[in-house]
Length: 427
Figure 1 (cartoon, rainbow, N blue to C red):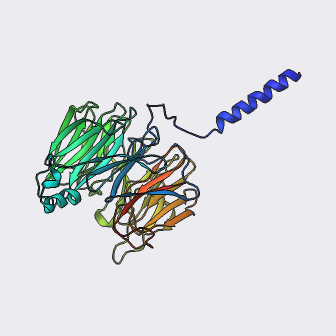
Figure 2 (cartoon, helix red, strand yellow; figure 1 turned 90 degrees about the vertical axis):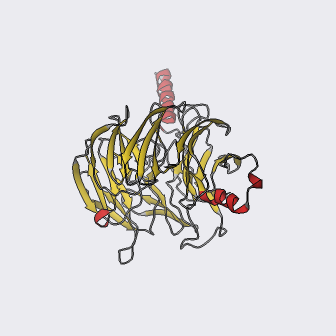
Figure 3 (cartoon, rainbow, N blue to C red; figure 1 turned 180 degrees about the horizontal axis):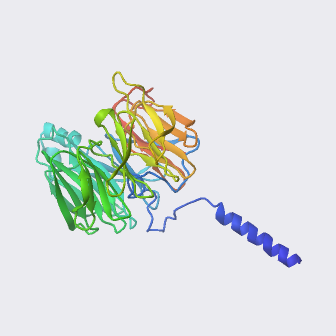
């Protein structure tokens, strides 16, 4: 009897250790980047398997040359921050630079170029987005500002974890204008924008094209991938493309007017597609997987990708316009688009993410970083940093929240040096 009791106690303690052990991605597990892409996985819903920053304590800030467009985290905790000036930064979990990629022209004597041309390369180009695969391969997309007049061929570039270039795919004179999407088989998907022309491209992990689809005129946003093998691409229209060849899986929704660039639809666990549409004053729209309308709700101007938590609730925030109400954060019922709760926030372009404990994180254009409880919309913490935060945060397996500056001074109290930009780590 005594031995049985001891065994039962041991089993109890063992079970307790398993159930309540922290969720950590091991550094040697090459099948799992901690935050591989925009929104964590290819559904773009921003649902993290990790608990996030509960205190909002700043651990460190890493200074960058220009604004940050996107942040991902590799399996070993390396933070990859892409942004202006043509740089991709690889930052250690302690906030130290490991290496950086520098997109310079294909000249051997860059320093001998006339100063105006050097300035064009410094300020006219950017690494628009980045993603990191399970084997450690880092992908980055290159784009340029409209005022860039120098010849600048755009590329999708693949680097190994040390920053060594593996290959590059020449896009031509179309900008890589969307975030990168990694499929479950390692395929890289992205949109490219030219003068009145839009392409969507699929590359194999070795850099060879799987397909390239011309989508017509207008503009293109980013994409999300459903478990049905359909890519949902936002922009002027909402497309549903087959991953096999880029053909239309379902007829597109015309004139969706969703945010361009670094914003995408988000896909619920049931396959429903949710997208912000800025026609008619700003509407959140829901579609079936076949792009049949389900509901729409007018909320206000939105420049973001919805976040979706474990029970399907959607989280979106609006941007105040002249004569409009202040910025608002909304929790939306996925069945009918009804509001569950709302919270007044400063205007934001930062797509939110939600951690496994139901805490929502995002930044604002007035220099704030927010943590909000999803059960009732109450504020857990808010930090006023200064600058602007437009990019989507990333959460590492140890709970660290990473977010980067995306603009200038903004309306916040400047605790940062004006003219410089930072990647921040909060816990």
